[in-house]
Amino acid sequence: MKYKPQKIYRWTAIVWLASMVAHFIWSVFQARSQPPTDEIYTQFLSFRTTVFSLTVLPYWIGGLLLALFIEFAIYGRKRVEGCRPPPRRIIHPKSIRDLIGESQDRALRVVP
Image: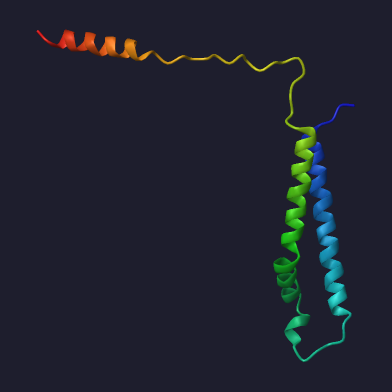
């Protein structure tokens, strides 16, 4: 089976966003179904949004990052079939004797 990791990551993000919005709507309706109190500000949507953002959203973001991390570990990077990475060239540094010899040659050239 051929898979496309970018498509899988996109669908994960879409499902995550839909689930988070559904959880937010459910929490707002649950808070509104409670009996009213003297603190009227708790009934405002802006207050509910702030409470959700500070208490629940960090867990949702952590869950998304964990899901994407696991998917990346499973599917890895997108590779082209039949294409190998270029061979690595090992560059050996010059030996100390070569460096000393070059510096002596330069010194001899400078002296008239």
